[in-house]
Length: 489
Image: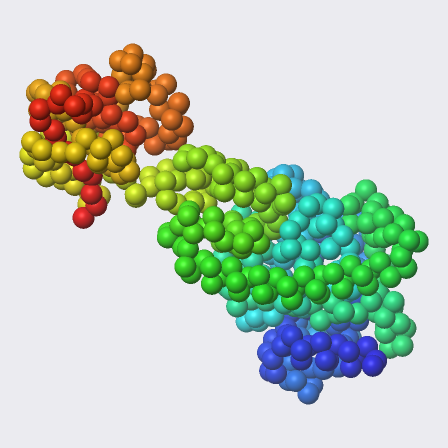
């Protein structure tokens, strides 16, 4: 099959271009983009395509880059195609955004192409990445420790909104796609096509500069690996193809699991049912964390193995309040019943228990029901008969039995105060700083100011959901009991 037929088949297989649409073609002037433009031009008539040439001058390489821009203009005019050619100061942008030059170039180029597409009313941008670029990309991701999403390599079509661009980039419509029609074509095929068609092109000498990571892979690492296996580039591309298919199955399985496990989903937080998450196969647990990170940070490019494995370990074995760091300011937190992935600065008090605003104080009705914030109620009953065994084996942390005589003055529910001390049961009446107690039981620091405390005057009787004081315990000689229960309406 000749190159043109191979690309036509590829376009059809992946449904990359629809008849009658406008396609913005990124043209650098090199052989890949010139071949791509010629191929699309040959297909345009039958498919009624409207092509628009786009070229970005990065403000680098002086006269060579000027000549590249003029070459693209001349080519577009020769073939009667409309074009947009612009210039930016890439070094200044890279400094301002604190990005490496390679990464800044990628982002700025895609921002430019997105704007041109918007101006032209196009939903498709075509670029000239070929199989050699794919092999380099997969190897680069492998060396950086990417998971299956990264090892898929570049996709035939990708929503441009999924890319991490610049903070000032206007919102990109999800319908705008970046397509790669040459992704299964080797560089040798590209050069042979240009020779066969008599196409001239520009050669970017900076592509030989091995101080750039991709160039080092292209000119040093891959040639060395080719000495061991001459088919290394093809093998890497095959790896990407296999993982793309496998990843689709994993994504669908993870999506079905997420439907069952998802408790909360917002722009800042995604939470799963902790017990059910822990029952999932390892691949699904990894995928759910990875998907949550991508959902909260849509422009995140990779979540590496170390991040995922550390998060998996913390989520599987960590106690309440345990945390694991994820990229781009995200954190995984283990709650009482939830596993939460959220912005590191988000408070997100777990809804499985009651909370009070810092400084709040509420009189408790005994007997009776005391309304609490967020639909919670504290119910109080006075009991003259009870089973001590039932009290000792109580499994509910939000239910407490207290010796009624310890209440004395009407108790109040409030939040902690500076320098407060507590005599938790199990310490033989010894007191300790409340802050030390909360540290010892690993209660998350960010929640401590919101924790309800049952107190009579300055004495703490119940740190709600955590521990009773030694003085309030029900004993065999206790005459009357007060049962407190926190319930959500």
